[in-house]
Length: 462
Image (cartoon, rainbow, N blue to C red; front, side, top):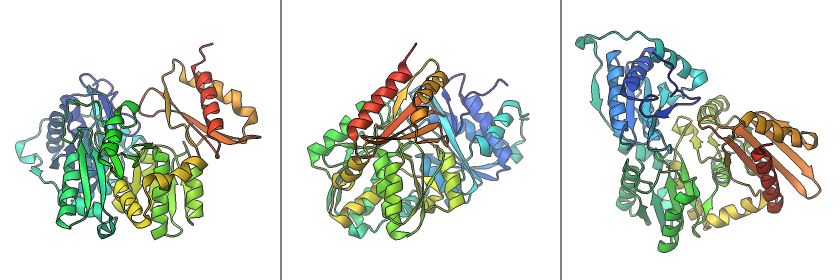
């Protein structure tokens, strides 16, 4: 078989048709079961129009290798993570393309205990088997069995175990599922709150799953996708807005003013929350924006640990360090008690509890951090020659750099008369873009000026 280009660094992602189709999904199923020698695998799928067909083909491949399949239905990625551990399965696969365009789909794969499978930890071998494996027809008696089971109630119970829901003060929350897979979990949590008399009101926006994406691809990182949440927060006088991507493994928060809060500052907030319960714990963070996280963790008595960007790297390092929490500025948040996996539901619950206990609004909790460490947010560049453009930036700044770090891409920090600043520049592992992040210590104007300067260097076509 030809090379399968849908295999990426962390997962499987490709354009529907030649890159990913039901035949390829079937081969992946057979290869995955063979690689793990799996007896039972959990499968789930998001709401994309192609997801159910790909899931069925995947399940057929798994069963033809003699593996039993537990289909948990239309779910988010973290529900597969939970079910794989809860049902003690040998692995799990979610069919999803998260926030990619409509003509894409993909898969996220884990092994037992929801340990990540990435390029370095088995994904390349699954690819090799899918490309070259000899998959003979199987006798019906040797086929694995299919059953349907969704431990939604147990999953929701686990989510709510991270907080004391009886401490929640009256509040209104805007919940924007983006027509993705998050809506049914929001409904289940709402039902628990109503039964318990918890005074939290949900205002639901773009709530129903719809693979036609009538309100755009669910990706709250795109500024044009933020207005619906922001406007609903203001209209309903909500204390916070929450928006998710398609498979809801990332959540994005809006304060009571309808202002989008960069994920970077939420990492600091959640680190602080965990360290209040786990003094001295280790907190994992990525290298794109670091100063605020490091200061918050150190001031709270914890140990910040930097590792490469990407869920597989974060999860592996969390296991190695036994870290209680890990956060990426891209709004991925990881939790030791969730199998070191990322969840888009646990973060907003924790922030609700923080607001209730502190009596502060979200804006009040993050404003000091934003003033202390203003940042550019992630800026993406589509460049003709990414390596040459990055090298141009490195050569321009190398002589004046106080520190150069190559943990992931290039990070440089500087001490100038007007203040300190740093940047991280890296090629994406999942998209054909170069990503830039810039921050300073308390000097927003310096941050903006340097962001503009680096942007000009990257776009220089000379």
